[in-house]
Image 1 (cartoon, rainbow, N blue to C red):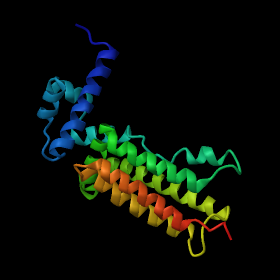
Image 2 (tube, helix red, strand yellow; image 1 turned 90 degrees about the vertical axis):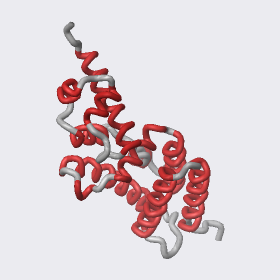
Image 3 (cartoon, one colour; image 1 turned 120 degrees about the vertical axis):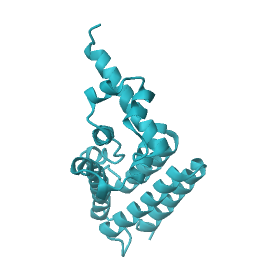
Image 4 (cartoon, one colour; image 1 turned 135 degrees about the horizontal axis):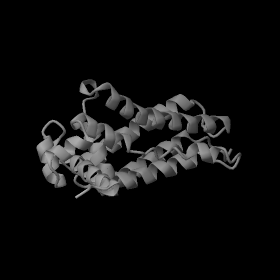
Length: 207
């Protein structure tokens, strides 16, 4: 029976779903192509028709991971003076922790990412993952730069310091959310901590 493009797309998606699940449960090193094919309900030959190996699977998984929660910041900024960068950033980080704690796909993918040794990975995969990190860093720095230009940061708080501190806090809580069996509690603490940190950044406009 002749395979259609639709059949091929469904097979490819099933293989990616199986790889994501096994990489999350067993780790990349402990997952074999035979296991991935069996989980997907396809032959090893069918898997190889779509992907050359585990590195190819990882590259495809992360290349399709469009999760920069701050990407909208550039669109919001283009709207003009009404843009409130600190409020926007705080809200987006709250939403990000909610998503990370409740959307299984995100939790699986970022757990896989947490366990990957980038130094041991091929250049193409490393480039894709680094791109995710760079986009997130640029957006955070952009928000605090805009906040400084609007006079919203308190004395002693430079955009660079605020960005670095925020990213460190976020990365720490991301790890806790991914590793905790009670991620809802960690998410709640993360959101409280983000709000407390942003309160410390803000210039006191009451005086």
